[in-house]
Length: 115
Length: 115
Image (tube, rainbow over all chains, first blue to last red; front, side, top):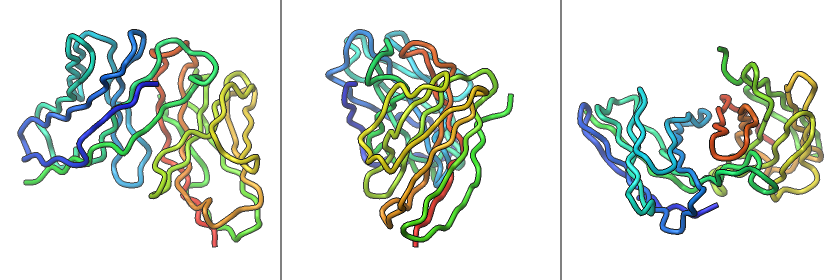
């Protein structure tokens, strides 16, 4: 699976949009971009994923650049409860062998939402 | 639908003992993956089970083992506990589909402390 690079930490004011970048310059054509977040000592929470088109759900939007080498997770109106570690993960699109079930987590971005 | 459940939530053991952790996946999910999270190593993949068979395994010693039952519930076992096994153990379930569309959903984790 491709490696991802994220900023170590980011701040955001409550009510404003939080834009979390992720670089995955070595992504392959069949690899998906996944985002999870983890609030302190809880299990990671799935947010969104995409292949090449932009995606939106009730939690967030995912913007993937045309060359697919980077993406941005957007939380449109951040709240204090969005304070968490956000993980960007690239995962191969076709299961088999060493890809079954395996998500490779990096260090993620610590997002702090302040009043 | 009920989420992924893990029992127990907290556990204290002493060195040399063994421990068994349990995971009940989301109804209808056939794949269960296990992860270990420590402050030093982050989130690391242990193994994945699908239809009672281990399909993938991470880089952990043989003291870490698991199994899956016909109802998709899974257990993991750690024998001869070491201090370094103190960690948050996370279970994730997914439908078990091929590759990138097989979204994993995590449980709350079991916090294991080895004294």
